[in-house]
Length: 153
Image (cartoon, rainbow, N blue to C red; front, side):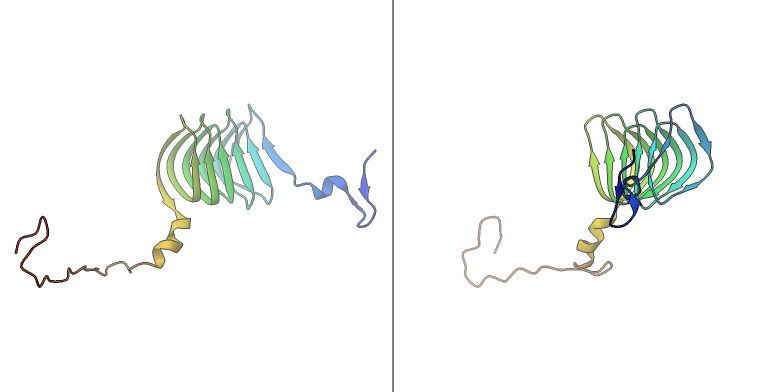
C-alpha cells in the first residue's frame, strides 16, 4: 500500500516536503514558527516565520509580519514583509505596509502600497562610491581658439 525506499528504509512520503495549510474559514490569532512551507487560505492575525515558502491564496489574509525565503501573494497582506529571496505578487494581490525583499515580481493589476527595500541591490551599491563622499568630474581645458558648440570661450 505504501511505497518504501529499501536502501534507506524511509517511507516515500518522508522525502517529500510537507506543506502546512490554513484553510478558508479558519482564523488564527498568534505567532507561527515552522520549518515547512505554508499555504494560507484563511486568516492569520499575527506573525509567521519559516525558512521555506509562504503562499497566500486568493481568500487568504495576513495582518502582521511575514518572514520567509520566498512568498507568493494572491490574497491580502497588511504589515511587514521580510522575504530574503523572491516576493511574487499575483494580479489579485493586495499588499500594504513595508517590504524588505531580495527580488520583486509584480503582475499587472496587483496592488502594492508599501515602502520597499531591495536587499539584493546592496551588493552592487557597496562597490561604488561611499556614502558621504562627493565625486567631481572636471573637463579638460581647451587650448585652441575654436570653442565647441554650446561652450563659450
